[in-house]
Structures are given as C-alpha cells and as structure tokens.
Picture 1 (tube, rainbow over the protein chains, first blue to last red):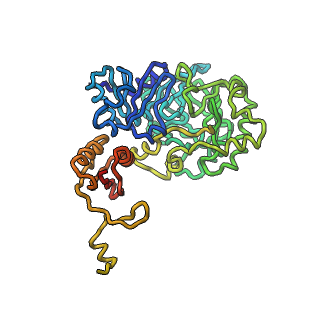
Picture 2: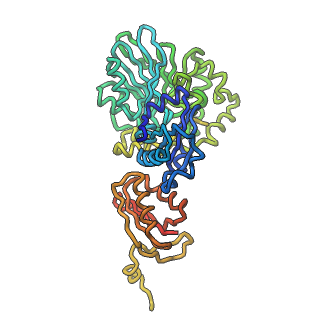
Picture 3: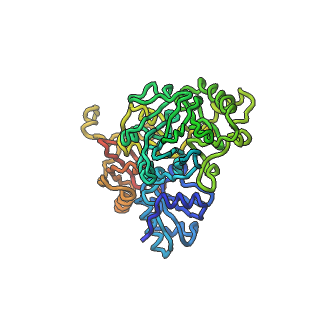
Length: 374
Length: 102
C-alpha cells in the first residue's frame, strides 16, 4: 500500500530542503496555475486520465523509488500510486487530502521573542503564500491576518495555554477568506479592521486607525497601528515591540503590493508611493519586516520564516528603488499578473455580503496568491 | 415536406445544437447514458473510458456527474484521447456531457 504523506510532512521537507520528487497527476491547466514548489522539489506532470491504461509510458521520466503522487483531492493520486507500486517501485506515497490539503496547511514558525516576555509567531501557508501572525504574551494572544482555517490557531493557543483576545486584519483581503469573524465567534475576542476598508461590511468591528494601541497580555505588549494605504485605501501596518513591522500587503520581501484589486488603481498608486517612499522610510531601518504574503520560495528562509529588515529591503527590493514617480506608476499599473482566483467574490465574503458553503469558500481560494506587483 | 419549428422541437428535443462552425447540425441521440453521480475523481473518467471502449466510433456517450473536477478533466481527457466533447451543460447541480467517440 502506498503511504499517505500529510501536507505537514511535505511542508517540513520543503523547508528543510529535503529531496522530493513529485508526480503531479492533475490536468495541465491546473498544474500550470499552481503546484508544490521548493528548492529541493522536482515535479513532473502527467494527468491521471492519460495513465488509465498503465504507467509504463512515464517510467523513464521517474526516479526508481520515492515518488510522491499528487492530485487535486486525493483519489487519482491513490490510483496512480497503486499503479506505480505494482511496477515494483518502492517508497511510493500520495498527498493525503491532495492539493486542497496543501493549500490549507499552516506551518507555525517562531519569529522571535518580545521584550517583557512574549513571543511572535508567523503561520506560513506554503500552498498559498499567505502569512498570518500570532502574538502571545502572558496567556493572551492576538491573531493578525487570520486564514479561513481557524483550527490551527485554536490548537496552537491551547498548546501555549493562552487565549485569543485580539484579532485584526491589516486590510480587507482579496486573495483569501479572512478567519477573523469565525475566530471572534469562537473566542469572543475583539476584531479590528481599518474603517476605510470596511465601509461596506455587514458586521460590527473595532476601528483600527493610525495610532491605535492594541494590548495583548498583562505585560501590555502593544500592537501600534500605522496607516499605510496603497494596496487598499485602509491598509494599516503594525509595529510590535518597536522590533517588528507587519506590513500586510503593502511591502513584501521581494516585491511590493499591487493597487488594483478593489478597482481604484489610479487613485491608490499615489498612496502606495507615499507609504513606501515616505511613511515607511521614516521608520527605523532595523525593524523586521513581516509581510502578509510571499510569492517565491526564495523568500522563505532556512528556518521557514519569511522576513527581512526594512533597511535591507530599501537596498535590495526593486519596488522600493524606482526613483522616477512616472516609472513607478507604470510598474504598478501595467503588466500586473492575473488577479487572484475569485477575488471579487472573496472581497464580498470578507465584507459579510456573501456567505457561501465551506466547500465553495475552498474553491474560491484555490490557486496561487497574486497580491504582489511582480 | 415542409418543416415547422414546433415539429423540429418535438422531434429533436435538447440534442439539437449548433456545431462550432455555426452550421446547424442534428446531434445524434446518445447511444449510452453513464450515471457517474456521486462518484469522486478519478471514477467519473475511469467509468467514462470503460464505457467508451464498448462503443463504436461515432457513437455518443452521455455522462452525468456531480464531481466538479470532472468538468475540466473530462474536456482535457476527450482532447487527449481523440474523442470529441460535443456538448456540456449543468442542470440542477448535475454536470452533463456528450462525448462522441473518435
């Protein structure tokens, strides 16, 4: 019997750069759209429906052992894994739950300690490029930019003997469904949103504004809000412990945010420019930038963390080094990658205007993240 | 004989369609109907292939499925296996496909 490999095991292999050969049996279009990536990962794509008569035709393309078969949900990869094993191959496995499970898996990575006690964690969603955060201090926790799947956060705080008391989104997300409201229902925590992004939301929230101080734990670890529009009009960053800068979708490690996902590109380009070339530039160089996304595996460090100091990014991030404003405008409005899957519907869900079934939500989020300019 | 539109409708119900070249063609009624409702991937295609193997070239297989993945996969499979996807539609959350054997 082929072994079922969990998304968690694969995440560890990808982060630890362990060799991994993947036979992806989804159709070519889905494969072209997104796949499991990593420095140590090799992937070969043949749709399962081209293998119904047998796998002989592809055996010379595969190593002679340790092949991981992957499909959308699981069924087809189990079938092909069986077929591979019947040829005598050893070490055959399949991805448990398929790309659906991969898309939803969150790997918690410790970012660092907070003075006066407390810790900051980054939850890396490798399959989708989403990054969310948890501040833990004295038995209390704050979740920032929560994913739709809230169980990983609930399990994690339980393990840490803490309670979620604060929840915040840096902006109204267009690429993934926020777990903010679901987490609030589960925990009774305060839920903070930038009011300028929330003009159409159908539920109550706490106004997250420039200078807002959010307290976590009795040591009064504060999350200080910094208004930083550009990706959306309300986009707000957080400075935690004068050490960490949570930039949301404004600034990434290798790129910058795109201003076009809410239909007001021209209006927001100027805001984006002001934030990146003005407000952020006034902040201390040694702040550790922690974005809400990554686009390339090259942004993931050896320990699985995605971050860089602000000073470093002003040196190497091309999006921060376009002197000419006209050229900058051109860069962030032309040649943008395709918009994320179902991004308009996702915004509606995050406003509380649409309430699809879990399976539909899942379908909306399928595919890669595309919140960056390049 | 002169054809009236209502006669056409009565005689050729929903398998009357336009070909891709916008020429009006009369689609042949399905030779076989495969019920793949409730089956998860890869079974809709496994069963489709098996059913196709038992048909003759030019025959049409009508497939009913509920697995959303079947939509893209059946289209890609028909392409790669030399058959033709003549028509497809969704009725009451059931995906219906008509595939002509190549």
